[in-house]
Every structure is written in C-alpha cells, then in structure tokens.
Length: 409
Ligand SMILES: Cc1cc2nc3c(=O)[nH]c(=O)nc-3n(C[C@H](O)[C@H](O)[C@H](O)COP(=O)(O)OP(=O)(O)OC[C@H]3O[C@@H](n4cnc5c(N)ncnc54)[C@H](O)[C@@H]3O)c2cc1C
Image (cartoon, rainbow, N blue to C red):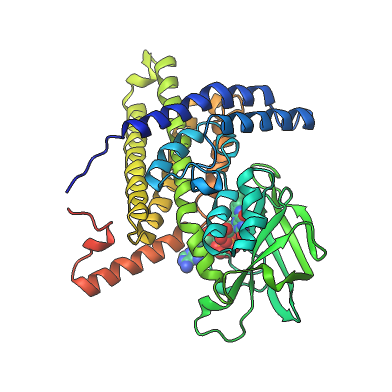
C-alpha cells in the first residue's frame, strides 16, 4: 500500500495560488474594510464584490463544486488544502464562494434537488448572485435531536402549508431562499423518517424574521423566524417525504469537515501568533519562548494541530474513496473544535492583556470558536455516537480496530 503525503505539483501550485490570493487580495481588502460596522455599506459591498470578481478571474471560485457548476471540481483532500489557506483571512471563504451555510446547501442541492430546482436555486448560488440559509433548529426543542422537530408541514391541495418556529438561522437576513426542515409524517416507520426538506423563497408571506439573535460575538446574522401558514408549492419539496433527516446528515458530513478545514487555518494563525509573541516578549530575565511553562503551551498546541490535520486529511481521504466516513468526520469535528478553542485560549494567555483586547484578532476568533463545540453536532452527541460505534465494532469483530479509522495499525 502507498501512504504518501507529498502533494502533486498541480495541487502544490493550487495551494500556493490560494495562499498568494489571500495574502495579496483578500487581506488588503479586509484592511480597506476595517470595521464593517463603520464603513459605508456601498463601499463595503464594492470591496467585497471586487474581491469576488478577482477570485473568479483567478480561477479560485467554488473549490467544492464540479466544473459543470462553475467550480474547481476538487476532491475533499484537495479541498482541505484550499479551505485551510482560504480561512487564513476572515472573508477568504466568502470571497471564493465556499463559506457556510451556502457551501453545505450547494452540496445538498447538488445531491437532492430535481433538475428544475437546481437551475432555479443552485445555479444562482454557484454564480454568487444569491445567498441561502438552512433552517432546522427550534427554540422549543433540543436541536441535537431532530426527531423532536415541531415545525409542521401539511399538504393542502398542491401546496404544503407550514407552521413553526426556528432560530439561529445563519444568513437568513441575506438569503434568497432557505432549505427548511419540517415534520410531515405522523406515524413514521422510524422516528428519523418524520421530517422532510423544503425550499422556501425569501421573502414569502408566512416567513417572518422576527429578530437577529444577539450572541457573544454580536448580532452577526443568526435570525429567529416565525413561520405562519407559509405556503410552499409541492414542486419545492427537496428529496422525498420523510428524507429530511437523511438530507441533513448528508449535508453535515462534508460541511462538518469543511468547518474543520477552516478551523485548522484559525488554529494555525493562533499558534503562529503565540510563537511570534513569545519570541518578542521579555520578562523575568528571558524571552517567554525560553520559559518551560510557555514551551508546554506551544508544544501542546503543536501536537493538537498536528493531530487535527491528520484527522481531517484521513476523513477527507475516506470521503474521496467512497468509504464510510461518518465516524471519522465525527471524531475530527469533535477534536478540531476543541483543539481550536484550547489553542486560541493559550495564544491569548501568552499575549496577556493584548490577547484580551480587540487589537489582535484573537478575541474575535475565541468568540467564534466557542460555537464550534455545539453547532453541527454538540460534543456530547458526537461522543455518544463514537462510543456506540466503538462498542458495536467490538461486539461485531471482537476488537475496536475498525472504530479507530480502520487504519492498518
Ligand atoms: C453561531 C451558530 C450558528 C448556527 N447556525 C444554524 C443554522 O444556520 N441553522 C440551524 O438550523 N441551526 C443553526 N445553529 C443551531 C445549532 O445547530 C444548534 O445549536 C445545535 O444543533 C444544538 O442544538 P441546541 O442549541 O438546541 O442545543 P441542545 O440540543 O438543547 O443541547 C444542549 C446541550 O445538551 C447536551 N446534549 C445534547 N444531547 C446530548 C446527549 N445525547 N448526551 C449528552 N449531552 C447532550 C450538549 O452539551 C448540548 O450542547 C447555529 C448555532 C450557532 C451557535
């Protein structure tokens, strides 16, 4: 067997092109934007759209989509290189049109939508002329358990009539359509087969955005939505009746891993900053970098980032090979989300008061990193599933070997 971590010359070239683009186009663009709350809206949009058109001109557009949809047609291992470079800048993934939740929605539509739905919704999303959102979580019931979803869709004539309540719907205020998950089945064969996906045009009568939920990183586009007698044509059902859970799961595999790829970029930035600061700050007779307490923080962060990279690469490899990847993505998502928080936290510690200030990006990164531990699957839910699979592997094979990535070790 071949285990080879060297990149092909083409992939190495691509990686360097993305790095170059982020460094020379996106980071200067971000500097021009400065504080997005203070810049004129028209200037803000002009800078963002200019960066997008440069990305398209450079062939760095839609890395995750096939060529027939205007994308770069990359596999998941290749995508890991691109996302990990793109997310070195805050707007990098958005500029290259591979940001959440649009990216996950594109995968979902590509796999589940009819040809007509693809032309109407996927095409403009790929062209970057519209945005989208994904509406599943509800305030009244645990988002960790989609079998509890209460938003209800009933077929009345040729329309689905939907009533319910959603919140934390990222991007809803900018979206032209939502992929909405609602309960359609009263008595499903399995609890997981109660829900169905729908494509909802925004604006629509009956889709009411009542507020932006204020979070620990501000009110940054996560909306609460009240759904009252929303009529959705039968043709806008996504997938089959009762496939809403499968659709969500399908979406979350690659989308979770894409989050991990972007978090690796953030963790690497935090570690780079930690080391840089330790080489410049002097206290009690030596540089911070020379103190064992600081070296332990650097060492722990280095080991965790290394593990994170290997887990993401291996999960991506399994997706590319058509192998079962659920457990590997789950383990990667849990590990990388937690490593990210720890590495940023240590970097803040090494920066002292500066790290707590907003003069560096660390405080902002820390606030964002916190949601990583429960969005797209809370830590404990991933742990529950990982443990179930490990126990099942032992029961079936007398060993846990297959539960640890089926690696030849
Ligand atoms: C920034 C952000 C963006 C989001 N964007 C979207 C979006 O665009 N669309 C959308 O639909 N949702 C979105 N969400 C919601 C997110 O998917 C949910 O927060 C997540 O699914 C968890 O659901 P919940 O918040 O209801 O927590 P709950 O399900 O109530 O869980 C709370 C806690 O209970 C514990 N827990 C749950 N189950 C178990 C278990 N089996 N064993 C042990 N402990 C358990 C965990 O500690 C968990 O954190 C977003 C959330 C955030 C913070």
